[in-house]
Length: 413
Image 1 (tube, one colour):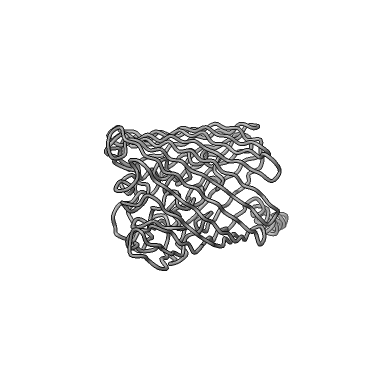
Image 2 (cartoon, one colour):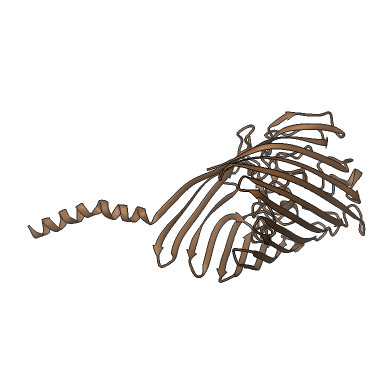
């Protein structure tokens, strides 16, 4: 009889145990839908599939209008979760995929969770260790001084070429401006082991990603200061080595400062150096129907896309931005980029790209905003004219300046 009572008591307790377990486990579905209509001048030839094209001009010197992928963020959805074991210990995961809003095709080379796909452990004192496809430690460091944050926005017209956008200069279309980070530093990395930690006001980061070939690897490390209120700054280095021993090295110094309750300043300086003939560390084959057109050819999934430069290419990039919060509903943003490139078309040559941009952002509530932006980019020296495409500056050769006018909406959930 006593045994029967114990069994019944245990069965009665099971629902309570299940509820207690669920209370320690959280799973969240989230997303961003960011789209705009943008007109850009001095555009290129016809588009590839999946860009949400509205109208096309006849070529260089024309104006193109597109339904773009958003100014601040590429559209995406994701699932993230954490299981709390107590004493500050958690198991965590994040699966996140992108989408081209105009056509509904999958972004990031057709990878279902091409933005992020990782699992890991977190300790309240010692930090976070993750395994999978993640944003880069070096990219995180740039975000310390980027007005658009660690995801870097789409930074209109700074680099109008990218996955799905390889045929022309676009405005407000996802992949175009993030490609700046792909080209020179990499944004996301496959096969990654990544660490992030914060000790009082000191932040630390480290990462290793394995390449598609034996001997092809990436290593990165960062150290920073973050007092969460007025000042955040980070220094980071990154080193890629391909299977033949050629290297691509990056260094960045980035930071932001809250000058007044309504004025925030952002800045970063980055240097990127490629050995002549450097080959990308990791690649991903296009998926039929993806934003890359489903050609079945090989396209970069994660790291720097500027592969196989004929000369020892070097880029020195400087950015300065300001954000002015006019009131709780309005943000005004101004940003400037300068990229000085050397050894582009011949050993010893140099050229410069300058981009200026102004944004007005109006918040309907905390998660929905409307925005307008105008931007202008110019090329000079070795990166201008016939070399503009080969230099990775604009998508179409012969173009030395372009402007963009865009208006859009961002919805977050």
